[in-house]
Image (cartoon, rainbow, N blue to C red; front, side):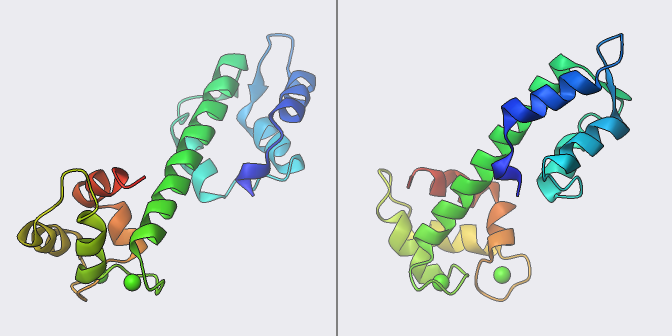
Length: 150
Ligand SMILES: [Ca+2]
Ligand SMILES: [Ca+2]
């Protein structure tokens, strides 16, 4: 569970693990994450660590960056889930044209029916006529409209 990281405790373990140059190797950093209950294979953690690809070591700056990424990504994921559930009126885990039309009619700048159809066709990559959470996540156009619902 990434959202349960205790930043203060993790920082203190990080201090203990530092070498005389103030750095912690990636391997040691992953061990620290593990002792704090963070699965280094967690999708979000992996995604962030990939952004530090070139880094062989972590210092305080990189650690702060790590936490910033973590918070940002978590927020984005949580809000996205929230807005998806909001539109998914019958809670079946998929957005159909009717649900999107209803939701988007409540926007400050309502979206026309033909525009909704267009957005759906573009987002519905597996062509089953409904939008899964993953399809929603990867559709920037849908996401941009939907964000105004929050
Ligand atoms: Ca639905
Ligand atoms: Ca679909």
